[in-house]
Image (cartoon, rainbow, N blue to C red; front, side, top):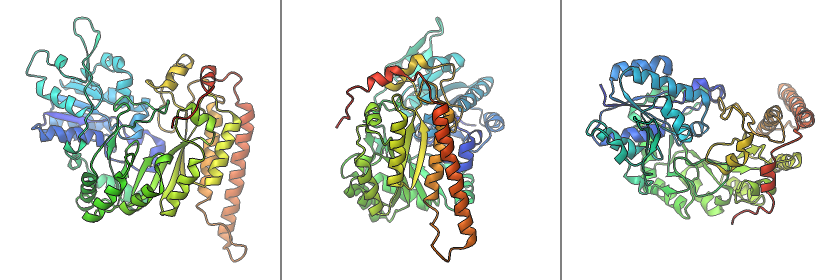
Length: 499
């Protein structure tokens, strides 16, 4: 038995793109909540939906643990949870129904539940945890049976008032500032061997995830921040190095993904990490997400010392007009400096790109394609503009949205507002650009002496790539919309990047 059964709704095998990538990570956000609850005296169990089929596994977990409280706490550090995929919402609702049949109180926390609090509560959840979930869940677990109506006194909650069925939101809970006070994620609750086997089979090494900070202070107007807002709080370099040491020695990790929205924001923090890692002999290869304007030479050098091998940067566009419209606060000319600086220290530089933002024209798209060809990033991630509630972008295109307002899975790429082109065009553009970047990792044929098989392969790749780009050029003419979003185009006027 367990007092509390924690789970989350992301199931890898409902997301075909991620099955092909096969890079599953444990649900950090769920494990942080479990760790605090357990530290404060609760017996805790975990149903890990990532690799376990929720249709069969979750009812079995309910029967085995017989919890009085079920908490669906999403991994708010994982971009897949942040995408608010409807297939995973269905998983959450299915687990809700099973938990209620078992007689448990059911609570939920996550980006999707924060965006649609009323819908989740009216669907049957007893409580929604708003903002950071750990302390709110702890207080709720302590008080849920002590007083007839403890909920109104707990910050960070939403629930339905029983008499009127109106949604009640308690006072917001202040965000944590001293992250080092949290116990490390309860990784012992997951089946570590299943993750190791998946990684080893697909990639030949084992990667685990960790997080250094919470939040991002920048104001990109398409970025949803329902959990951490625009604050930024980071752990000490020493605590991060100690966790890396534990991942390496206790769990056998050979690589780490730091899932922060933005890594190494504070000046000197990366140098502190390098020194702490070296002192503890805790170095592991790791990848991060950050911004181009943060990848200055001193930071790149310190990151390399600490073990960083790959940096994913939100480049988004090669058009300054579009960067300004996004309020990205970066300049195109900063991109080569970041790319070259990382290359100097042997760090892979990878670009996140976003197409379809309101106001983007074919000329802007071509600027992005030229930038990618000039910079030759080591990898790219391509998406289309995705309006999520709570963003200025969403507010601008709200009246254009139809019935479908969320992607089904991470490969959806549906255009849900009046972009310049249909989604068929953007999908073709994604495929062509990915294919071209992939060819850069293939050694070029030597003028003589190259094996015939390699030569034939290169010829086939070139022919396929030519076909993909011809498809893009054809669709650019046939998929162009005559009336793209006007409200956002007008908002571009006079836009300048914030410095």
